Image 1 (spheres, one colour):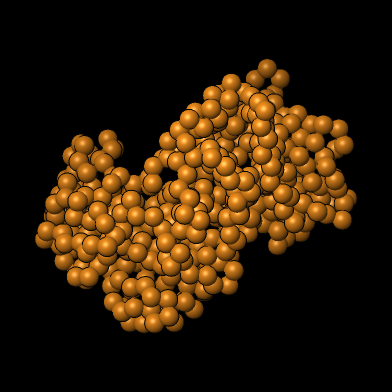
Image 2 (cartoon, one colour; image 1 turned 45 degrees about the vertical axis):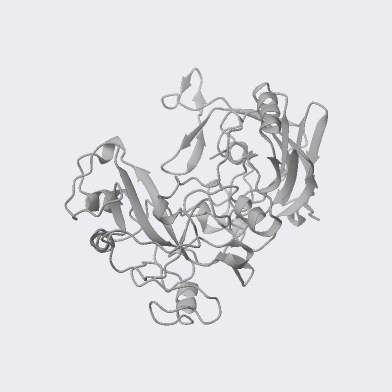
Length: 424
């Protein structure tokens, strides 16, 4: 899988983060027959990462893009901390979005296998083994904006990435990604890319050949590529250019970065953050909010967001980094979607929402097909009969942070300003 690393390097993108499926399920047009498995409808169609998304995979409802639930095999290999655990204890403690009762049933039904074989619920996993989890996959919704193409050339395609849409398959997202949508709606399958955070919108450069990707990588590593963003922040940003040189420490467990603060010659904690620098210039202000040009000179996780918070001018709808000193009243009803503060991943479980229950009322009995939207309701699935996964209420809002320009030696790519950037 390719991403733009902390240093801005490009790497190869394969069709999905998941490893290849076994030969029994290599085609989305074939049914799966697993030795010893139970509780699988005989006509189940299993999808492979090699099968690109299709236009009919999507459902549009109330301004949101949803994905029809589908059957998929997740593959992982035993990590050192997993060795010696029973298969049920492993899943219960490592992947807590489902209850233990589900994992007991899944092992007994053959939906969780080790090295392509059914095992007992008390089976103890060993080093280097392959674990397969056959699931009825529900993807989180994203906003229904399309992925507009800005420029299309032989080596490069530039697009305007909508906020709320991940760039590439990751976590619970596979089809609801920029890469998946381009494959489904534009028949474009880029091999290389840099990335923007899910809630960030704007310019995304997709290289269409290894040679083009290599040129970008070398220019980025040599510090020859400049990046420009715009942000809408709370308060009247200073007229003078502001440069923040402050180390950024990212806490992967919390999903949040912090700035290392210094008191004289001593840091307030053990220094472990990475060197980070950002230049800020005010574009406009209305006396309450300001539009600010942001030029990151390094590429750390959430660097612009946390440096703006450090200056005292956080992004106006950034719930993750709104300073405690900012009046809650001034930020009321401006926060980006709750995903900035509540992460629904394999490590947590959230309850169903009101909209989930409203959707479920429209669905038919377990095992049947939805009469209008044509997706199967799986009797063992912990998300069915809901369309979206539990915890996703359908409310999304993009962060007020937008990538407007990338420039390098003899080239520049740009993206138009979003509507929120025009303030009175």
